[in-house]
Length: 317
Length: 250
Image (cartoon, rainbow over all chains, first blue to last red):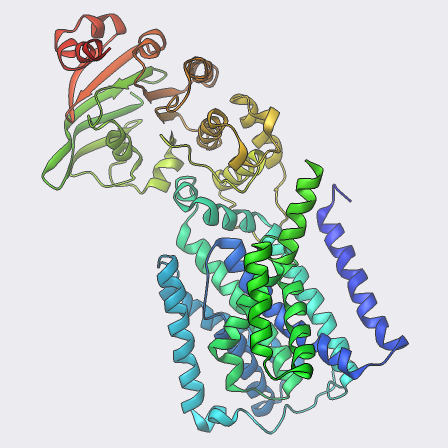
């Protein structure tokens, strides 16, 4: 296993997928299935953000725009064309990638702080376009009328079980693909840029091209998360593309950890579980969430998985 | 002639940091550049490597005018450099640092289809680590290396690009006396084995006079003298401007 990290990753993914797919056979719980569906969309989104944040040191505050763009592009394609679901999903991801290319072309040359602000500004611009282009997007009401149900290899995504299975497969494959990117020579190049971009430049890395590629890839995977979100809500809403949603992804990354690949997934699970549990108990769930994040930031000083990993390393040494 | 500069000039504001400098570094030579602080030594390296543009003059590398090439292009041509303050990738291990450098060197830094490292890259990175004696800490994260090892890693990163000219900006900066000699011995051995054209900036005169075959003295952005260690030691202008003052200070 040590010699074949790619195989190890694939094995972990396969086991996780089998477990996820088997659970409903033993115990049907709509709440749990619902939770996994939401985690799958958000985890792809947060992990894609971490390709930028943890991978390349590019902190984007506007990553939610690509999540929203993926959701709207997919929902609109399904409503307005007869494309099959996978084709529409791929087309939506392609549209998101082009969007990320355009936004990235403007942003990636900027320094850290300006990069954060300009990505945020771009997201606000995108959000206002959604709100004001009523004839296409339904404005602040969102894109209603549902997503037409089209069968996919005998799957009917209107059924919760089938949607659950579909989302589990897409999440695991999506995470595996991003894991591959992080472990590729390009992933190592991004780490070089994060650590010391001047030196990376002297070693022959074309900085803007590497950054732009990372931005487009991250945008595309956020778009994939958006596709799942659109399937879940059976439409698309401006909130998906609003900046608090970018904030959610940043929280997920912070809670789970930026230096461990599965950190954002774990962060997403914590975040959504907190949401579900706390909203049942109190209406002040924002307060509780804030306290938890403070506890992570001040207590652990890093995300959960990074914390555990460092502890294990410390115990070994 | 491996490396040559002609009439090189660079001013910052009104101050000429490098003023009409013409020097030649023959292929396979080992040259030290000395001079008081602010003489323009680091600026000289920055101009050769393309860190910033020159005002006037030319940089000629193996007969080609590289004055207007980008720094990445000059690296590809074969001009490598290490930095005064060790510059490496702190969160990566020594081997990961070198594998990334080797991957960049073979033009595959953008590769997305494979898992790192690409075939052959690990072996080559290990080879480079051995050149500077870093194989013993190959799996140590760069941020927790000793100062001397970080300087070695910096040099190793440059070596991964298979340079024919290597510029070392104070390879012994910040080291204790013993460590300095060990370092400079490594550098000299490296120069011998790899058949490099090596130029280094150094403040320790004992080191300079014992290691360098040839010395260039910069002072206020100009070339004050050039020659063998014996010639430099006997040069009245150098004694007045530089060597002499050091003895007064001591």
